[in-house]
Image (tube, rainbow, N blue to C red; front, top):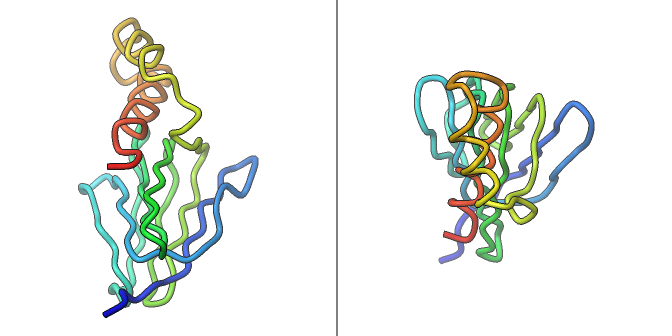
Length: 126
């Protein structure tokens, strides 16, 4: 039996990163990590600064993005991520991000950005 799909959009302040159909989304919110399937109860969540979003597309492709703050809006038919900034994991150098994470002050913008990118890289393709 085919999984039900729903519309997903990831929009950052400077670009629309993704629009398409997915069967599953994972996002890190201020109240914890959240998994979303089709027909999920409506909700609005605040994304953590230094988090990630994972999308499982209808063909099974798993895509991960580093996301810096913003909001997650879920309806029964769609998921919208409105992020301050977002970057696909496939363009991230995990070694460089580990070094940046170690040298940055915990809680700083640099720390959160490196944490986000490293987490997205670790969740890509898993």
